[in-house]
Image 1 (cartoon, rainbow, N blue to C red):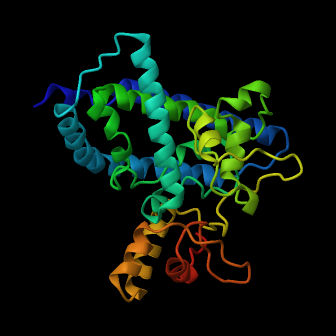
Image 2 (tube, helix red, strand yellow):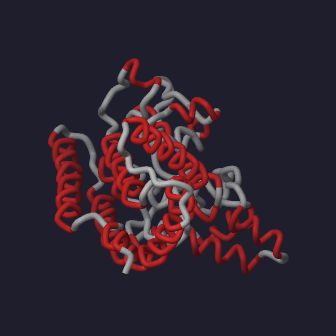
Length: 309
């Protein structure tokens, strides 16, 4: 067995420590908000726990698919970058930030990736627990492809995955609604203010602020939107999810795609269903409960909806 393959996972003790820490912080936030008299959706918290359990089970299959691809790419790398200098660390960080920006933008603009990512945007209340609701099918849909160029250039899969993990850990605190704007830091870094906008389902806030640690790529590529004091974000999907069933939330995007494919007459249209960009939000009078994502045929297929549970 390639010695790298045993390093593609974090040690179990570290996973447990990180999971316990972020869960504890999310639980503490809920208790404090409730103590202060603010509403807190504990059923959504329970749904997030269910999402975490399901994702852990599915990840076993996803890792089996992505690890060989990472190892093959590393075996055919252009060079070996050992992170022996500060410049290599900086290059890995910035390269990972750009790769994450590309993935995150695609996760909102391509139905194939949005079917998973809409799970993260499904809570109707933004809390620290929202950061932990990530869906079950991310590793099965090819998200690793966005980070393979870094491995091909010469960074080890271990270094790349560790950097992505640190990126995601940084984003945990961004899901706090009680942290104000942070002055000059808002120009360079992704902050809770920027991420509140990202999670907003207001038409003015859709599809923006895709950065991980940095916000500079959003500013460079025209996807940055600032939070407006007169326009508080509304959280959740454009057409809110009304179920607390983690299985339904995890699969609703894929079921909608399947229904749309059955109703689509030709292959070109079917490719648009799967890989096309999101459709505009449906009018409020429409009965479909559609996330802000899907092509017209796909949106129509959601007229079946996701029922309360």
